[in-house]
Image 1 (cartoon, rainbow, N blue to C red):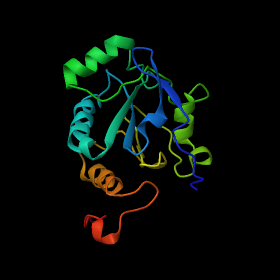
Image 2: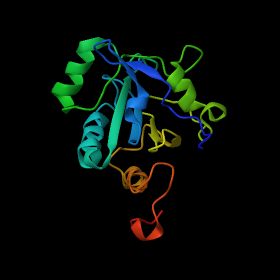
Image 3: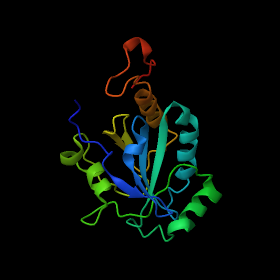
Length: 183
């Protein structure tokens, strides 16, 4: 049995206020990103959507969490966030209610993502908007990327593909099934 903590117990709210349990994403590779509509990195929304489009059929999803924690760069709320993302960047991935992602008031999900003592793998709090956490098919935090790492970078794509190539939840693919990807 897997004893590594997962994101699955966490509940979050969609922009329409409807609660969603992250266990709904069991078996998928996820990229969890804190977003903002008024940031220099905001164009990454398009790259995140492109990633989702490229890998969705293999079991990949992007989860966006708007936050106003850095430079107050998310002035929008609720449906206005959804409209901004959809109209300007064609975003179709799930975008959740605006939350805090750092400090004492951080949402429990982001406390978990940020602290190795909670998630078992990664110690990395968001330093700015568009900090990205990579979650494997088992719901475990396995890696992170700073804001300046573009979602379209080969580094991000290779790590996503490696996780997607794991054939069974909890078990890596056989060597003969893995893509030959250099580090």
